[in-house]
Image (cartoon, rainbow over the protein chains, first blue to last red):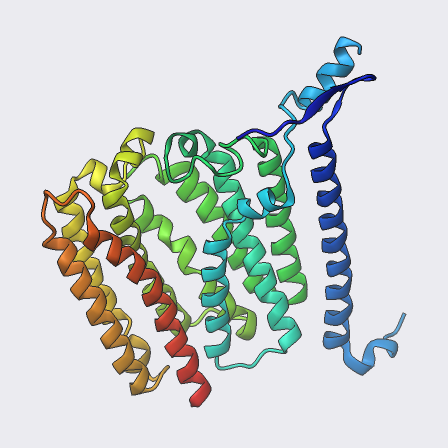
Length: 58
Length: 308
């Protein structure tokens, strides 16, 4: 079922607590994925270039 | 609150309702159960390849293949939300259930598709990357958008997409597509129709309601049962091919023949199924066994390779 997205507060219509919670967990998930990608590229670079990683011509 | 501001909160910037999708809903968009089978078959394709692959590169390839398959699943759920909403089996999926907006599913699937193909191409090799791109294209455009609602042969032709993961796994290790990897493709390709038709036999009402021309809906139950038996027989023969061409040992061949014989026996029971059997137990048994069959067949191939 569709979830509650907005709640009426004293300040008017605002995103609900559930929406904020999901938004926060989505942000954390995206941060973890990005960190994972950084680690992935780091390790693959080491594997592909090996000891020659610092001997490459600029 | 001003009308425009309120409307922006309620509809986002694209006029579509904002949804409170949780991380789990996005994960469900990736069809994790399908993804697990894809990862496993790709892994087997990679391991049985004659060229070794560095574990980090291999893991990268598997990650990209699984994400690419998941992305195709998300795009499928985006496009099929209208019929998923009608079918009992699929109506609780995130988009039809209203937990994720269709546009978000589209963006999620598109970003993951491009990302997984690009990373596979850049970090592993471009043959594997191109094959993954073709797999996603075939599943989303050829199967989902074109064939699924057009012909009862939808899952026969569309099954090619699900058959490619071991070929991508093989290509990740070798950089090429060879005859042996196409044998693995053929096994899954022949496995797909009896697997899905067994399901569609006892879900025919669901498919008919949604207007999806699955074989039982269009050609009837008897024709479907006959087709299942034919495909089961051909599959049982094809599954032994790796042993016949020297890709696997005779032990694999014996195991494949036994597993295939059980498949054919269950397909025979489906063929002989009583018309009055509304529960269709033989079809349910075949569907359940077909999943186990593919898992065991590839597992035997994997173990066989490990012992060579």
